[in-house]
Image: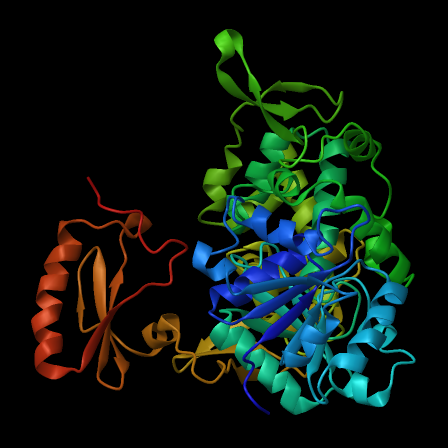
Length: 523
């Protein structure tokens, strides 16, 4: 199929506009359309205002003002014909199948034959979207679920149907990977796909258990955060970031679409505190505060406040005092086994979440690597669910579930005393649903430094840096100190590396796979 040289996006809300901005960031022209708003100064005001708003938004959706010039705005009544020039059309309108299908019929009349159409939906199955649509449209249709904000979140969940053209899937996947900088994870056509299927249960569990166990929000975020390799926002900080008002809508969608046997129904209930917060406009950072907020203290100084989950009132935020967290850095199981409030909360939330994830393969994905990747990229977990189970010990985890009378997922039984992930002869492998290990195969053109490090030794190394031979005559200089900070040892090793590379190799790249490239100079 021809390359994607121009993209159309229909729907200029937060997600649609953000997707259009990321396409423009890649240097690709994009058409952004939305409805005609009654009484507006311009018939294309919705799309025009979305672009203007993004130029002022922080964090910035556009990499530069120049990127915004690649966005052509319009409306679906006057400008639908512009989509005939596009090689890929992305729909990001309201989450209603009837609205989407009405739009698809209009798109089908203007798009060039073979042009791919995808939906950014995260809640509606593909089968429902193409129901009663022409076979030719179904062949050119797929779901491409971006995560918000599209510029910064790397995950793109891709869902296909039985009729979807394989060449189209390859074309969109390559464009998303190489041009847009996304990591594409193939998902099954099931509610919530991978990341939101697991993440929604995780968030709901965390809120309900904190309220029922009378755990303060700071403690909850400290326990569910860094010990598990989850960002320090934890759960309540994350809900403030994404918007608390989304929580009931996503939960309702999951409750409506998941089978009655699904474990989500055990936690899918209204939370009166959350409903009251939404009614009061306390929807998180975009509203009047959320579980946390910034307020003015004595003398007008800014101070952070936290919500008391029992009373619903704000109080000065305090630093969580959880001694068990220090032990968890070396042995995560010690936190989960602790008979303290923190330990009981950790087990109640993460134990059920990890068991749920293990029960969903192969329903949501063909392999555990896809599940781990989706949670790492979609929710910024440092380790995916199966990597966390390995850290705890799969056999221990299964015994703990069985001892409490909980269902032990078949995949966990299959693992037995083995780990889900292992390294064999320098090759990372994962356990399949048939009980056999398989090599983790990277996409074409992808080289990970972690893979190089598993099967080789550094050319040079000291306490703050390493030099690796990554093949084809290319060397990689890696920072390894705390925070990847630049200190004397880094500069000393770099001074040694340059003449070695100049003499024996073709090129040198400076790179690492840390969460942050470098915190800067170590002063």
